[in-house]
Length: 78
Image (cartoon, rainbow, N blue to C red; front, side, top):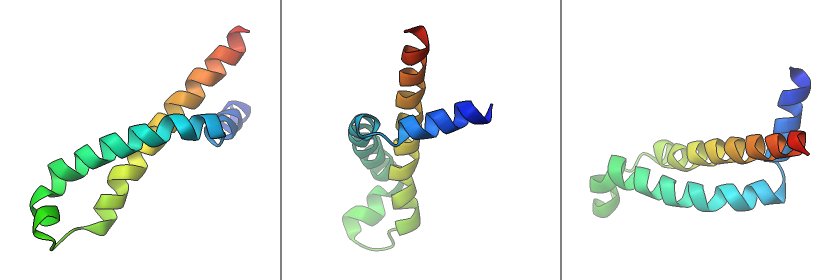
């Protein structure tokens, strides 16, 4: 099991995975921030910067995991 996790982490750290996950996190993170903090963002006060960051980090992690898992399954079929 440790080998599979290590393999996924290695795949998640590749340039290909980064290039896949970045656009996803920018679109989803922006949508989440607009949904969760629209009033604070447009009024320029009371923005929760921690939550703003999490709204980008979480979609990036999900997209990275998904891309790495997809790549790992593609490698195992070859």
